[in-house]
Image (cartoon, rainbow, N blue to C red; front, side, top):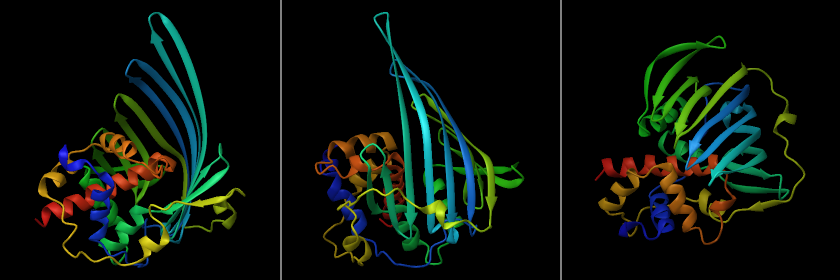
Amino acid sequence: MKHLTTLSLIFFALIATNSFAQNQLKRYDLESGEIVYETTTSGKMMGSTISGNGIEKLYFKNWGALELRETESSQTTVVKFFGKETKETEDTHTILKLDNGKTYSVDFDKEMIYVNRDMAMDMTKQYYPDGDAGEAGKSMLESMGGKITGTEKFLGYTCDVWEIPGGSQLIYEGAMLKADITLLGIRTITTATSAKFNHNISDSHFELPDFPMQQLEMFDNEMSDESYEDDGDDEIDPATLEALSKMSFEEWKTLALAEDEDGELKNMSDEQLRQMYDYIQVRVKMLKDNQ
């Protein structure tokens, strides 16, 4: 793919056509929420058998402008090679906090907090001036090939049933309550065991560990908060847009990390990388439609 030799230039060209408006954002059609999830993972990939489980707690208020996710999980990988079996178990503990356009990613191993921009928030502010979470979420899922196939009651809430490539999701007013996704032979089932909405949530749920903070330069405040105008010099050719539009998340992630000379992307969680990928895909679709 000769048009993809410098991924960073392509990405910033996509960014450059935007103006990051600081409008009121509604990430959910719910003022506040508290959800507890259980996750199981199982499957085989490249000769390895993978199994795992985890617990995730999600708290949000101000329609999602402030949110914190804390995840504790364990994953075991079993590899059989020439009659020998090796087993490796990895335990992880992560916290990801979103606060009005900034993300705080807690690395418990390094005892460090990485501060970055939330690309999904920037995108929503740009393309949905009224901060309509329902429309933004719908457009994101549709850009991934998803569609609503009906409704289903879950934990007492009437959810939209979304069929997306590789699985399905149950979504209530923008909040995911269940997901069953298979990717590269690995099936992950995430199920809410409890969910409460539109009630008072203590500020203590949004506190972070007392670790040093490191500002990631890739999307620092100076670049992200200013308005950028397209002067015509950053036009992306149709072949590049077509190649990007056909790239899976895993393909894009592999290419992005390979070209990550400064190590910025390596400090991001998979969720943050997925947000970046989704952002690019939506932007690519809009540029292709305007060609």
